[in-house]
Length: 179
Ligand code: XMP
Ligand code: MG
Image 1: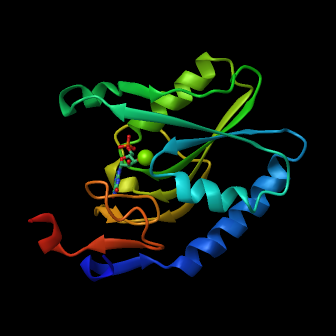
Image 2 (image 1 turned 30 degrees about the horizontal axis):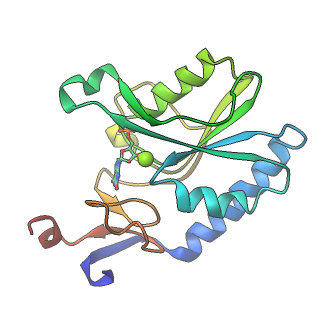
Image 3 (image 1 turned 90 degrees about the horizontal axis):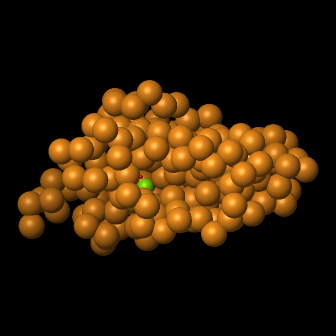
């Protein structure tokens, strides 16, 4: 698997250090608020697992699975809920935990949904941000790393459901795409 990687963009150690840094910030920010951490399946699961262990205050953890409609309707920002939250959002301080923001359409939909469900606050933490891909008007409150407008894999991010279990973020060799 690792031989398919052309370049490592962010190492395992850099990710761990970033989780510790963001976790410390969130500990202060959400002290006594019992935030609802919403992990977006499937890509955000490693980040959710690692980051949450650096947050030293009570949190509730829940997950949502969403998919964008076909590319024809993508610009509308319409997404389909494949798995909804178990938790009620009303009155809660929601923190969306994402792997990457690209166009921003998925997150823009989720933020609107949680506001509609009367969340007390809605914030976004994303491990990666690809500002070059943005079409929706949305900004994460906390960004781990900015990445260039290339397809990245690892640490939750996949290519055809593979490479999610790589411990770092990397770029695939071009020949991997063509087979
Ligand atoms: P938006 O709505 O911001 O969607 O366009 C973000 C979602 O798109 C996927 N995505 C990627 N997945 N490598 C991946 O494996 C990438 O470089 C990449 N860019 C976007 C991902 O599912 C993310 O949640
Ligand atoms: Mg995702």
